[in-house]
Figure 1 (cartoon, helix red, strand yellow):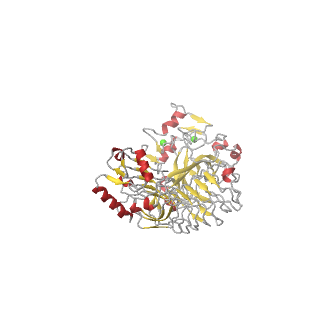
Figure 2 (cartoon, protein in one colour; figure 1 turned 90 degrees about the horizontal axis):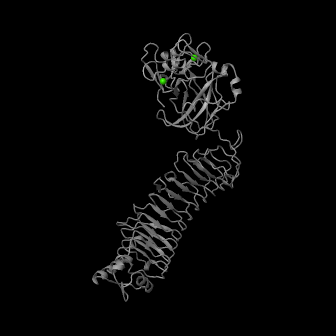
Figure 3 (cartoon, protein in one colour; figure 1 turned 30 degrees about the horizontal axis):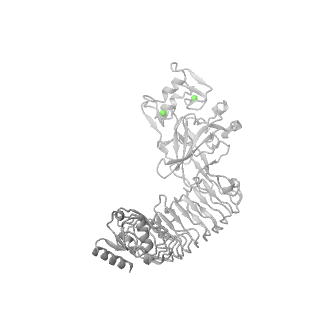
Length: 580
Ligand SMILES: [Ca+2]
Ligand SMILES: [Ca+2]
């Protein structure tokens, strides 16, 4: 009906060539004030320069009831008619308008977008009106954003324009969600929804889904396609496993989450869990920096992400990690690791030698930072209590190593964390706090484990063991299924050992030629006299870790390089598999 009126007025306009009647006195007054000379009596000269020159038209707060004739402002692209006593019957939007703002009017009833939306209109703001329903536009409509918050809308009908990316229907009376496809911004907060809009998928980057203050009991199935999701103020009782979800901001405040949260999204940065009846928190993602959790009954955190703001005003409790055997304790990812160093291996003893420790040569601070290595996500101390070096026998300390945790099935995977540790004569590792369990500052998932040593080629697991349920055991020394045997030295009846001989830590053992490892041993003992030795030292050139750098003669370190490259052809080399 409205469209028909427009068509008739256009016909009249064409017939009279350039005059259109403006029936509303207040609209005429606005035109007289803003386009002087364009009015003759009640008629608007549509070709008047002041009319044609107008691109931004702001008729807000003008007491206009009827915008009939606004269609004649053919070059207006930004239109504002807010705060007028307008009804849908009196509404007209200039045809070239890109953005229209019509808030706080008296627009009531069913909004049929085809009656108002020109083919250029991209955003339409109609907040604070009395609209009860919306019929989507059809032909040639390129609407991208519709903002109808604070109306009385109960339903949408017709086909959503495929161009639509933003929809704000907050503070309306929806009891069922509109059928929405892909959105950047969807706000259905403060309605009476009992089911979430399961068809609405987010365009992930920076997309927003706000379903707060409804009556929802379940999560939207497309939750993970939005960067920010607000579900606060609903009736949701439990949250399942969202670990693989990429959502970074999640509001769950004021839900009765008495049944708990299995797992939060692994990339979560911001979580609002205030007043949720949670009795325990789930394991916190290590990306989390803000946790609002006041108004709950738990008294400790399952873990403490490095970057988390631990202010009591935010957490509601002191940042205490739940103790073992308490109800809210969640086992962190932990590793019990065993490995062997070929150079230190004493075949007769069936153990590695601990001469460095016995001679008091082991540094109490890890040596790898000084060698250029940078730890990632490490919470372990870099120094140890010297008392750790007093243990003798199979549990005596041999040397420092680096343990890396890598993610993905591809070899060698992406480095997620690394830490210094100590290896004992029997191959089991000890943390820098003296524990045989290494605790990871990482999410509970699967990781590939790698070990590095200052003069051996690195060793890495074939498999990606799970770190989801407490301590994980990796015995690289004896479990042949765990590693690629070709990347190690397999000594029958003894074990699987990391390859000796990489003095310069360039991940390749070279006996002769450019960048060889052998010459470094000669240089260490003075460079000219091969029979010279360096005794009582902690150096990379000491390949058998006996505290002596020796180039020739019994128990020399040079021969270990030749042995590593095959034992007979000096020009052979041996590379770390894979390089990482
Ligand atoms: Ca090398
Ligand atoms: Ca040596």
